[in-house]
Image (cartoon, rainbow, N blue to C red; front, side, top):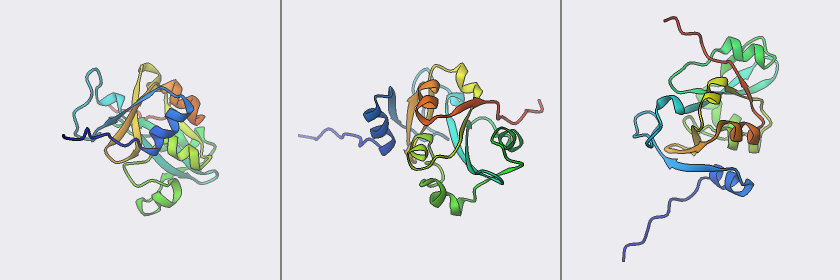
Length: 161
């Protein structure tokens, strides 16, 4: 008899389950994978770790289809400027490798300020990394924000179109 393969929950999923936060784990390559039905690319959000010149690490969460405005994030987070954390320093700053940064895991380990772009509020559910490359979670934006103590703000680069 073939054993049913049970996908092991990531630590992020375990944390959310234990806290009673409604979410759904999915396996997806956010950049080219098939999305669950009813979802499109603007539902997928990337978690970016930046370093503020006054506050230290700051987390910005934006749709993968958009670009983060460092200027807006700096202003909102009380910094003069912010810059992306170099990939070589990412894991020691957030605990995650590039592509696996996620707000839930980062909040568990650090008290970094977290800002989610306000476009997330237009969605019933958003998709963010579950802490491992290829694993994501589907979660209501407000549930995520409440759990990680994030603020919804305008942090997108203005498009020139």
